[in-house]
Length: 181
View 1 (cartoon, rainbow, N blue to C red):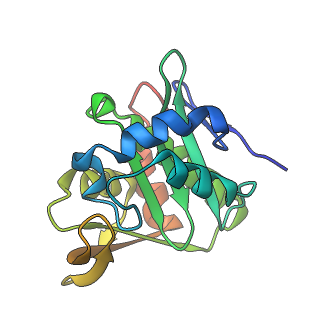
View 2: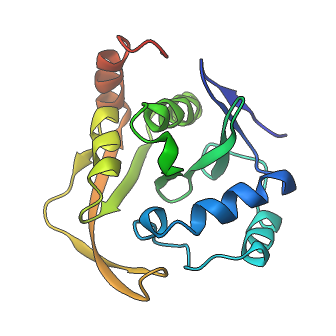
């Protein structure tokens, strides 16, 4: 069964063929892709079609949602597989959209798995992603690790973070003052 999550401003849904141009455009922006681990650069329509063919209906332990902003279309993705991951088109940065999308996904996840621990992280230097994670209650692990990044073709330093439901609920109570909650 497909799942769609909605917020005041966004629709999180399973990606479709119609989203391929937005995915290709997003992944051909090196300022986005340089902070992603599993995406090569440059990125082709064939890459997007192959990826789309592997998408299954979202489950709380394995979900990939396209982020649709009504009137603008697909502007990014948020996923939870072994870790929370996300990207957002640059023209949408600084508007709280990613925090909003991640909150919807984490609410859905923790409703199904209340005692789970969610992992995430970011490449060293990706302060925007770490800021989103911090707002959501993620806690940084000490030190860094190396992760292979396809877009770089080499290992890059990576900061790991973790989130418990208790930390999430505490952080979320501080987010409720936002107009989109």
